[in-house]
Figure 1: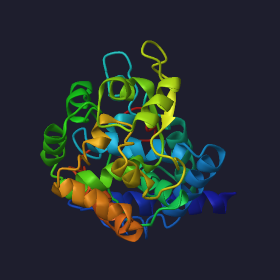
Figure 2: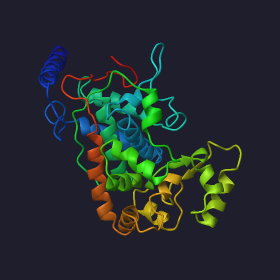
Figure 3: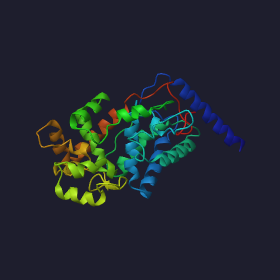
Figure 4: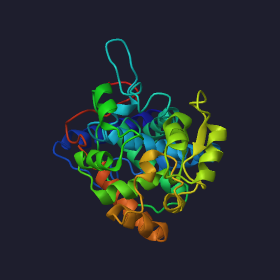
Length: 321
């Protein structure tokens, strides 16, 4: 027992010295290789277990990373709970009764802290890694996640309301939103392909299936059975026909005017635009989609990360230290 305590104490000193020395660090793929080589394999194991129990969870974890990054950068702020004197982002309109998977993040944090003998891996990094592992578990191509983020000590409900693009945006506003985050048209189209997995609530597509004309009539009729004109707002429908497989069916659906969300179909309007061309390209090039999705995820993951001595490594992802 004394030897075990000595080993743990030594490990703590090494970890503390490592973290103290990283004052001007940038994201890298090997950030945890020395301080905790078991970090990434542990996260992957928990993600795979969670998805095996509920395949939809892969889409939920991927979405958490999106919604985190689009609000003042990829800093884990979306995970913070409200408490007296503090309002987080979970009750913002794009997140309330919508984003999910927080319990799985808690499980990952507990497992990785145990594997690393302490709180070494940030909650922001957990979201980035879990997003990649979710894609791979559901059949998508792998990509190299850059890590070394630290966690925010703040959150902003107002910024969550303003910065996360709602499903009602027309194409110019949608593109402008992505560009405001340093992302380009190509990123918009390929990252929207994340809607190849997961579900959407009736409230997010009700107007589309009853009032829009650029929608396949049989597709709209089937959805109206799930989503009535009044009520049923929390009823769900798959975002594409293979909702637990990371593939290119999403893009094929757009070609047939079967995009579930208004913002989905805005990417393809048969007007010869660059967006149309990208949708057509990815609909028949699964390898290109997988490769480009990884590139854009890395780009998104680089949005305003906290590194070095900024922020903190949370012990509990739901609360600041």
